[in-house]
Amino acid sequence: MIWSGAALELTLRIPLGDSLKAKRSVIRPILDGAHRRFGVAASEVADQDVHDRAILVFAAVASSPRHVDEVLDAVDRFVWSFPEVEVVDTGRYWVDTA
Image (cartoon, rainbow, N blue to C red):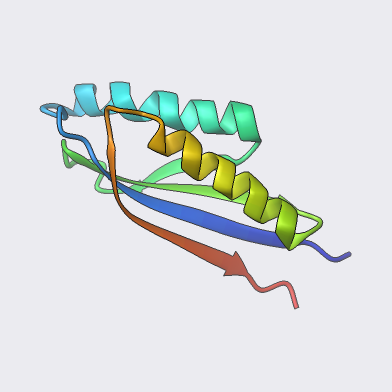
C-alpha cells in the first residue's frame, strides 16, 4: 500500500500568555479545532512550561502527497486565523514511505 505522510510544525508566540492557564486557553481551541475540522493529529510538543511560546505539530496521512499538502495548508491557514497568536516559524517534514 502506498501512502504519504507529513507533519507541520508551527512555533507560536502568545503575547497575552502571562500564565500557563492563559496559554492553555489559547492553545486548546487551536489543537482541538484542527483535529476536529481537518482530521489531523495535533499536539503541543515543546515549551510546555513557557507562558508566551508554544510549538505545535499537526500530522496528516493520506493516499497522495497532494492531499496531505492540501490538508496541512488548510491547517496552516486555520492557525494563522487566530489573532491571539503570532506564528514565528514553520516547518513541514515528510515521512519517507519508500
